[in-house]
Amino acid sequence: MSVSLEDFAPARAGKDVDDVVILGGGLTGLFCALKLAPRPVTVITNAPIGKGASSAWAQGGIAAAVSEHDSAEKHRDDTLAAGDGLCEEKIVEQMTREAGERIRDLLSYGVPFDKDLEGRLQLSREAAHSENRVVRVRGDMAGKAIMDALVAAVHNTPSIRVMEGYMGESLMVEGRYVTGVLARKRGGLERMAFPAKAVVLASGGIGHLYAVTTNPGEANGHGLALAARAGAVIADAEFVQFHPTALDVGKDPAPLATEALRGDGATLINAAGERFMAKIHAAAELAPRDIVARAIHRERVAGRGAFLDCRTAIGAKFKDRYPTVFAACAEAGIDPVAQPIPVTPAQHYHMGGILTDANGRTSLDNLWAAGEVASTGAHGANRLASNSLLEAVVFAARIAEDIQGLMPTPRSAYWNALDSEPGLPSQRNMEERDAITVLRDTMSNLVGVERDAAGLKQALATITSVEQACTRISIRNMMIAGKIIAASALKRTESRGGHFRSDFPDADPVQARRSFTTLSEVDEIAKAACEEIATA
Image (cartoon, rainbow, N blue to C red):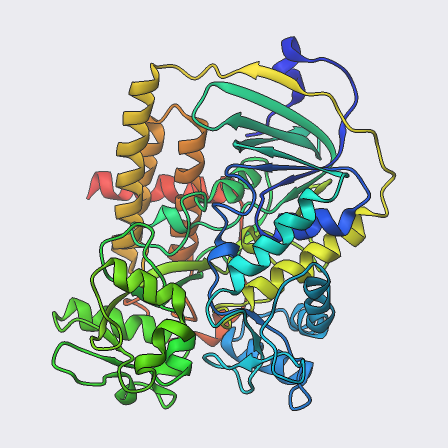
């Protein structure tokens, strides 16, 4: 499904178009806009910039080989190993090679990375890294500090115009060209068309398709869906990373207990006090995230519970070294100095997304994508810790460089159109709440840490049924994103990285390749699943 500006002809006010429109106000979108300066850019964001972005919640930091003991080659090899055979090696080489330069960019924007007394960056180690290479801010505040610095830089850059409170709903398409973005005012009826010469999708991940996630509410898969509706190729959508240690305290989103805690020696125990990871993997608590997440999931399903024990390794230093986690524990009535922290796997990151090349170009002309909404092949089947922020800045910079080769155009006027979706606001709100609840429960229960064919087919049938009853484009986008993930998971009949099939628990060498799909194929798979269930 595509949308043309002609669909909103009555509201058309002129023929100028924006030069560059970026959908998303997180790290990727802001960094790209800054790199494009002084070229005019319009950033469309659902929440105020710096808010509602997963980037701001990142606790670990950014992985970069910047010490004399490390190298881009070592970082590359660790990334490839974590990716479980599906990484694009040239993409990984490029990302790890450019990491140092991007760290210098962030320092120039005022990011206060931790340094030692001699002014050198302080580095920590996280799971599956062979060296200390994670650049942090005050232990667990890297994401917030980075976003604060970039927001300040954006406010001081006259070429960047920010449109806050608008949710992207559709791409405007003319023939094979993406010509702009159609957005709706958050919480209202007003819709606005943003024609553009270049469109960059930086809309984030899919966390709130799941009932338990560490992501902000704005991470709901809408960017993935609107690109798919326009005909873009989607890659590796089945690979969903579940962070092993979200706080199991009933909050939505679930607070994150950073992996750095385990890097500092915290252990995982069950209710009986048994340390279970040592029996499962040689790296114990620092095993790849998918292995740790499944182990915790199984302890909880078996009724033994799972807890992160920081009492011995961190103890009284907890509050100073991990203030964000300490505050989340305190709010839930937990003292991590004296008590083990209850934890659960939570949807954390999507390795899949809109297929892009090394410069962020998608399969649609005039459309670029970067950050979590994109699939560059940098992460393969399982993202290496702290590579997400790195990928965001590396490919945001590459997109900016690619777009700079286009001839600039003047800034546009706006085109407005009223939302024609039926129903009173209260009716739409009820529809939204009910539909989203069904979707999130279905994704968590049937397309979660462990999956099988029967559950995936049921998920497709349930989501399809709910989608057909929805009238709001924004809700249908969430359903479409869920279907893409479930259908891709059904296609891959093996277990690899963040994708685990209990009916196919082993990796299949024949399937050691990336997956690609389109919305038309997803709809065919969903239709077959619905028919099979209906006739069973």
